[in-house]
Structures are given as C-alpha cells and as structure tokens.
Image 1 (cartoon, rainbow, N blue to C red):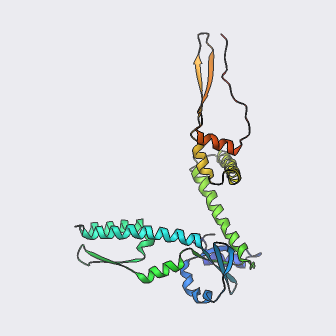
Image 2 (image 1 turned 180 degrees about the vertical axis):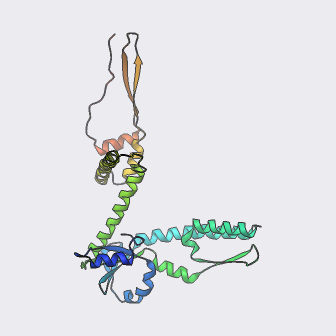
Image 3 (image 1 turned 135 degrees about the vertical axis):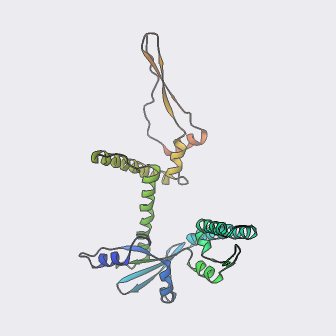
Amino acid sequence: MDRGIPIEEVLERMRTSDPPVQYLVGTPKGRLSALEQSLLVKPWKQVRPEVRVKLLPQDAVLYVFAESRDRIAKERSMRRRQMKWLWARLKKLSTMKLGRDTLLMKLGAAQGKTPAAWRLVNIEVAVNGASFGFWLNRKKLREARRREGRYLLRTNLTETDPAKLWEYYLQLVSVEEAFKTLKGDLAIRPIYHQRVPRIEAHIFVSFLAYCLHVTLGHRLKHLAPGLTTRSVLEKFSAIQMIDVRIPTTCARELTLTRYTQPEPELQLLLERLKPYSATRRTPSVVEC
C-alpha cells in the first residue's frame, strides 16, 4: 500500500490477526525526522545499479529506507520547475496593484499550482494592506533536497534481503497502472447499468480487454521496447475500416469494404509486431 492509505489502527489489526496479515507499506516522510539518526549509522545495500537501501529493525517493524538516483533527478527537476514558475509569479504579483481579497485569491491559486515549491517559500502578507513579502526558506530547501528520491517503507515481513523487499514494493506500481488503464484506456467507469448481470458482464468484458492490453505490453517489451501499450493503441486508432453499401436497380445491395492504408511508420510497427495473419475481406459482387 502507498503511504496515504494505511492507518496505525489498521496496521495493528493486521499484525495481531490470526494468522497475521503481512504488509509492506509506504511511510510518511515526516517520520524520517525521528529515525534519521538511527538510519545514519546503518550501511547501504545495493539493490540495483541506481537503487540502494538501508534496513532498520525496530520493535516488531522493519523499516526500509530506499534511495533511487533516477527518482532523485526526477523529483529535483519537478521541484526546480515549480520553484522557477512560483518565483516569477510572486515577483509579478508584487508589482501589480490589487485589492487585498484579489491578492489572496491569486496567492491561493499559485499555492494550488505549485504545492511542493510553496512549502519552501515564506510569504508574509500585510495585515491591513494588499502588499506582501516573500523569501526562500533555505532550511526547508536543504531538508527537501536530502529527502528527494528517498522513501521510507515499513513491513512486518521477516525477509531481510533488501532486493526482494524492493521488488515487493514495486508491485504497487503495477497495481496503480492497472487501475489507471481500467479507468482511463478501457473506460470501465462510469457504469450506467442497473441490473447486476449487466454490471458483471461489463466488468468481465473490461477484464478481458485488460488481459489483451497486458499481452500487447509484453509483446512490445521484446519486439518494440521503446513503445508503450497506450502509445501503440493511439497509433492504431488511425486505422479505420468501413463497409460502403450501394443499392442496385435490382433491389439488391453491393458491399464494398474500404480501410485506411497505414503510414510508413505504422506499417513498420505492424511488421515489427508480426501480427497473426487474418483472412482479408474482399468486396462482394452481386450479379443482378
């Protein structure tokens, strides 16, 4: 579970249940303050070339402190981008002639757009006026830099191999991606059916579609590793096929099938994926 889901009461019930429920959950970064000194003396253990962890057993809980270089670079880039925008916005607001209420609304909008950077800036609004001052909180900035790309997990598992614990936690990424796919790409929600069998059928068909989605993803890993399932489906959406039905003078109908000719890039992708051959549909000619 992610750090925003479990509460202490639930985790305690999981630990004391019979049999105990094993968990590996994220922990709010604020708890790092209490464990920071204990973690400093623990040695790093390399899990991957870009990931290392520290293990800290404490009471009945094992804390896993993980550091990812890729995540550090990503979070640092996001924070700098937010800070650049926020600083420019605050400078602009400081030069504008605004009423107090309007100023507070614009400051609130800036806070909503850049919450991570907002926590690193001190802002002081005049008590009875529409002016304000702002400055960088360097202490909070140093603390944020130390915690970027670093995660504190906790578990009641007895596993002591940091690589396995890290692999377990990465399953959360797969679960979140599955929910995102079902709700986004496959549009399983909202469900407007009112009868239970129809709702179950809707979910069943969506599950089958998700299985095909995952299967395509596995094929892409080997045949086109630079592409995601979502991007490939977007490319395939350009291919369309229609049946043109032309009535004849003898009261019968001529059906002609027409389909989009793939662009060179899409044709290369189709050849790369090596799709199974299918019987081509040919126009049906009806003699009068």
